[in-house]
Amino acid sequence: MGEDDAETVTVDELVEYCRTQAGLLSGAVETMGAEADELLDEIDDEMAEIRTRLEGRSDAVTEPESPSSAAAPGGQDPDLDIAAIEELEADLEEKQTIVEAKQVRMEAFQELASAYTELATELQRDADDSQAALERLVQFEADRDAPAYFPDRQTLLEAAVAEPEPDEGA
Image (cartoon, rainbow, N blue to C red; front, side, top):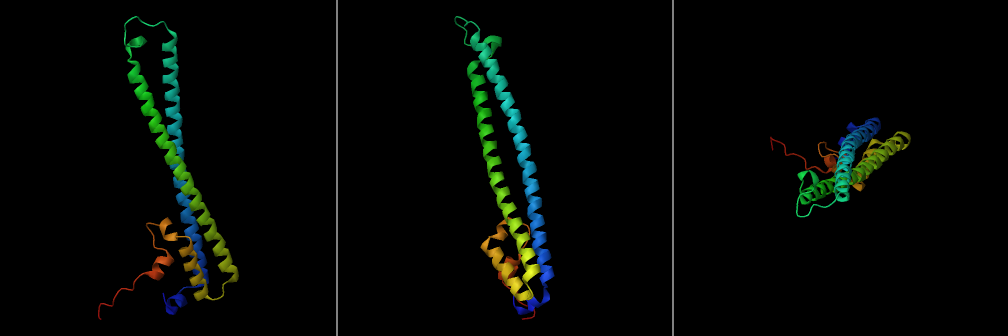
């Protein structure tokens, strides 16, 4: 981005860009939060199922043992029940790991959204020169690896460092 590019963009447009980025990040946080809530509901359901199965197993343990029967009361194989519970526990742990990762990611998105909002306020208050404001915004995005947060959208940093396309007439 040369000086000509900076002259075509105003400080107000850069402020609006920051606010838009913050809004997009906040929307992503809401989406991740909804996904995490769904997983937490699934975890609750699986915990209830594990408790039910364990309670059923403890009832089976308190009953008198059959002399030579390998099956638990009701004709269930105790090894199958234990395997099913272990499978549920493994699934539960995987979902908990995913929820924790989403929470960390949500926090990172929230922090960047807040930083964009603060930058918008600072640019609106302090910036008189659109070139300086643009440089500050590009540096801000570079320092925070902003492009990693917007896989479907080009940031100003990416636009600034993009190779210019050759003229077709050249």
